[in-house]
Image 1 (cartoon, rainbow, N blue to C red):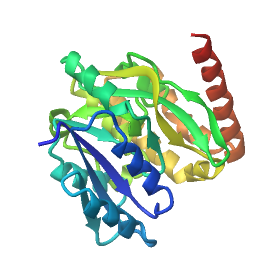
Image 2 (spheres, rainbow, N blue to C red):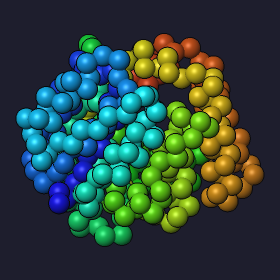
Image 3 (tube, helix red, strand yellow):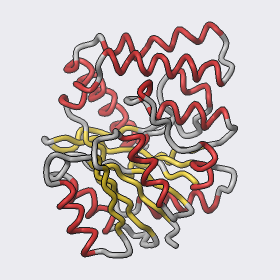
Image 4 (cartoon, one colour):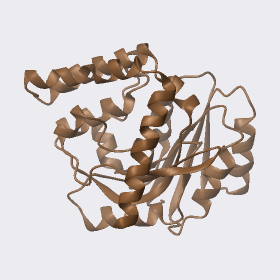
Amino acid sequence: MPKVSIIMGIYNCSRCLPQAIDSILEQTFTDWELVLCDDGSKDNTYEVAKRYAEKYKGKIVLLKNEKNIRLAATLNKCLSVAKGMYIARMDADDKCKPERLEKEVEYLDKHKDVDCVGCGMIIFDENGERGIRLNIEHPTKDFLIHTTPFAHPTIMMRKKTYDDLGGYAASEKSLRCDDTDLWFRFYAAGYKGYNLQEPLYYYHESVSDFKKRTLKSALETFGVCIKGYKMLDYPLWKYIYAFKPVLSALVPNWIMFHYHNLLDNRQSKYKIKQ
């Protein structure tokens, strides 16, 4: 049984998938399995993944959905076969630094009271690296009124924690915010997390990615937040923060892209000074 299972939903990503898988194969920590699930791709994503699975039998597990069931349900399918003591997330258009798994495993091994660990990210697009993005080191439930406490694709969580939470909520009401829903339930159950203050993950983000920010998805997030605020017993005055994703969705994509780019550049300069 591997110590770590990396779970990844793959969909129409044949061009970028090889670099994602290669970054796992190059990890300094080697006691892992990679569980891939193709979510009804219309390109040759499954064939690309199959070549890797056949070459690295025993290390790469490949699943396939007959039709597209979206990310949350696909990740739950990966979780159902994952054997690792720890579960790491990753997206198909991203990359990991070679030491990512090693450092996250080391942290969870040393801190038995922590249930989930994330890390910083290097933001990149087709033009190269744009900056560094770090999350707060010790996120608490109150941090959820501002943003998600962990960068979802960077996390490593104890399998027992995932099982206790019942995995992801594969609901039509949370298709674009399944991670936000997870964190509300995570903190409501009394779990604890930490963010390594080091960028160990390369996160792909371009202007086109911001086109996914629709008013429909913003309203879904609003609904998840209202439900989560009740779950965590937030005072009524904090409910105003639930409107943040709706207001954000009204801002043009290119403005949001440059706003995030500015924040990433500031964090990068701060990190260099440190």
